Figure 1 (cartoon, chains in turn red, green):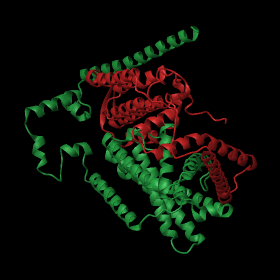
Figure 2 (cartoon, chains in turn red, blue):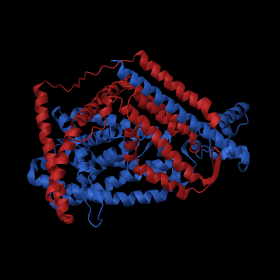
Figure 3 (cartoon, helix red, strand yellow):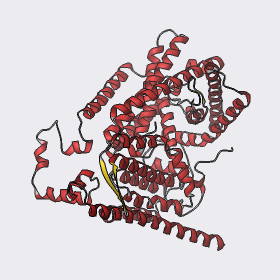
Figure 4 (cartoon, chains in turn cyan, green):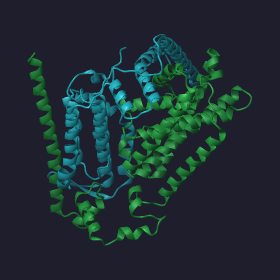
Length: 258
Length: 343
C-alpha cells in the first residue's frame, strides 16, 4: 500500500494518546459546541480558543503542517459559502485591530468568523482523531451507547478501506496505461461502469472469503477487542483542565475582549 | 455537500443529531432481525467499496476538464435493500467525518440525514415503485436514474434549509437553494447514469447479484413509506414557512416572539428587576451578543476612542493567544529534546 495513512499519527505514543477515548471524544464535542456558539462578531476570541487544540496537537507530537494541510483539503464547500457572505451582507461594520481601524462590512466579519471557527473546530477534530486509535475510539463509542451493529460495520469499514482504495488505484492505473485520449462520453461511461462493476464484484468475493474465514474461527456476532478503556486520574485531570480553560475563556477573557 | 459545523447553530445541530441517532438506532434494531451474520462482512466491505468507488473518476461529457465520481447511496440501496444500504452509507459518512475530517462532528447529524438516510430510503422506494411490474431494461434504467436524481436532490435541498434555520450565512435562502438544486441535478444525473451502467454491467457478468438482490427479504410497506413522506413534507413545509415569515431565529422565536401563543409575550416584557439584571448581565458577558446591542450601548456610531480601544483589546487577545501557543510549542520541543537525549 503506497498511500499515506491518514491517521498514521494515532499510533504514536504520548500523554495525550494515552487518555481515555471517551473522555477525549466528549471534550471535543463540548469544545466544538462552545466554539460554534460564539458570536459572529468576535474574531480575536477565536484565537484564544485555538490554544486548546493547538496544545493537544503539540503535546501529542502531531506536526502542525499536517493538520493545516488537511484542513485546506476539506475546506472548499465552507470556503465558497463563507466568501459569498460579503456579497450579501453589506452592513457597515467598524473593524479594529491594534493601531489600525478600518471600515468594512459585516459580511466580511461573518466570512472571517466562519473560517476561523472552521479552522478551530477542525483542529480539535484532528487532535482527537490523530491521537486516538480508531479501535479505541470505536470501543469508546460503543460504551457511550452506539448500536453494536453500527460499531461492527464501522470496524469492518475501517479495516478494509485502505485495501479497496489500493485496488481502485490499480484499476485507475490500468485505465491510465491503456487510455491515451478522451474516448467520448459513451465509451468513458462504459469503461467507468466496468471498472466500478469489477471492483464491486471483487469486493463481494472478498467479503465471502472473509466470512468463511470468520466462521472458521468461530465468529458469533460478538465484536471482541483488546482495547481496554479505563478512566484514570490523568483523564480526570485532562477533563478538569479543559473545563477550566473553557470557563476561564468564557468568564474572564471574553468580557475583556468585548 | 458535506455540511460544516460553522454553518449550523447549536440547536439545529443538536436537533439533527438527535433525529439521526434515533433513526440509526431504529434501523439497527430493525436490521438485527433481518440480517444474518454472514452479511456483516459484506456490509462492511461494501462500505469500503463506496470509498474506493468515489476515487474512480471519469470525464464528464460536454464539460471538459471536470470529472465526476459516484456517490453510491442508491446503488447500495437497490442491491442491499434500504435498511442495510442506509447503515452502510451512514458508516461511510461517519468515517468521512472521523478519519478524513470531511464535515464536522456537530454537523454529523445533518450529514447523516442528508447523504445517508434520505437518499437510501427515497432512492429505494422510487426505484421499486418505478420498476414494479414486469421486468424490463427500460423500466430499470428510468427507475434508477429517477431514483438517483430525486434522492440526491432531496438530500441537497435539506442543506440550505438547515443552514437557513441556523441563521449563520448571509446568503439568501432562495439563491442557496437554487444553486444547490442546480448543482445536484447534475450530480444526480451523473450518479443515475453511472448507477444504470454499473447495474447493466453486473447484469451481464453476475446476474445473480442483481436479480436476487443481496438484500434478502426486505419489505417496506407502502403505507408506512407514504406516511413518512407526508410527515417529512409537512416538517419541511413548516420549516420553509417559518423562514418565509421572516422570524429572526429559532432561539429568539422560542422565548421572545411566539406567534402561536400571544399570551407568552407579557412574560418576557415583564419589568421584573431580576429579568432586568439578567438582561444586563447578558449584555455584559453575553455568550451571543448581537452586534447591534453593542453599537447601541456605545452610541449610534462607535466613537474614535471606543474604536481604538476595541482595536487594542482584540490585538491583545490575538497576540496573547499567539504568545501562549509559542510558549507551549517551545516547552514541548525542549521536553522532547530532553527525552530523546536521555536514553
